[in-house]
Image (tube, rainbow over all chains, first blue to last red; front, side, top):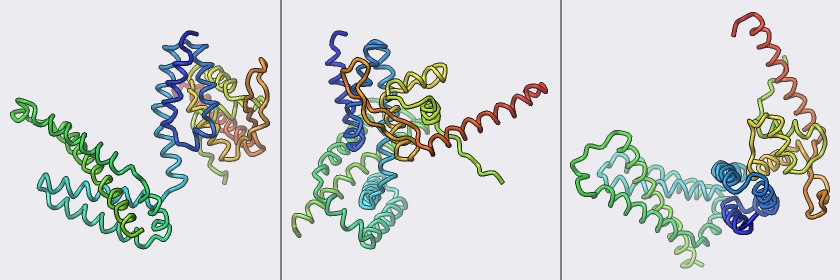
Length: 196
Length: 112
């Protein structure tokens, strides 16, 4: 089949979305199976099946791995990110009650962080991560997209349906959470550098 | 009181049942599953190896020594049922049989 190597290269690239341990164990088998399917089904049917497969298995294998090896630092960092993001969203939208709730989540996450010995150990690994700017960037881009959408000409006169309003609030919270994650990871990295 | 058996996900169940016929490699298993389910369960590579990995971790199957494929071109991993896997596959078959016989009775009485 023509361009088989291109199809394979693209599939291998998409397989990078799988967790590393799964990729290391089954990477060659995945590619070999894809190549056989490509020859058997043809490009269109093979890709249709493969894309459906990737859409389901990539997130589920990540989720599975997280559940098998729960990392308290990641859980705590996630809580902190939600707390920071939520507080920022509450401040921007002027809903102080939610702001207090998010601050309570932040306090609980910090308390858990100081109590968990395992967490403090793996926090060092997290603080080494240079991914903070990716979260910050993704959050900023997402927030900018929402702001652009809200400020479309004529948008101020439109009444939002409750579904659209909920979607906007969830997107807003997700954007602030990403920014929060960037701030948490960036602060951890800064503190680690400062205190060795 | 009999122990309740939790139904397995379709992909795991069909892979276990396919392995009742003896050891086999991933791609052949994928075909067998599609055949045995009359095309209802069509797995992609991720589902196939994700499920095989889960069954391996659960101790239901083991990987046997890699063998050369018939054309001798590549080494393939073969899988076979463990004693526990064989037991689980047969338990699942029993569960399905009892389900079918229960509903056969109802259908026979004109209830469905």
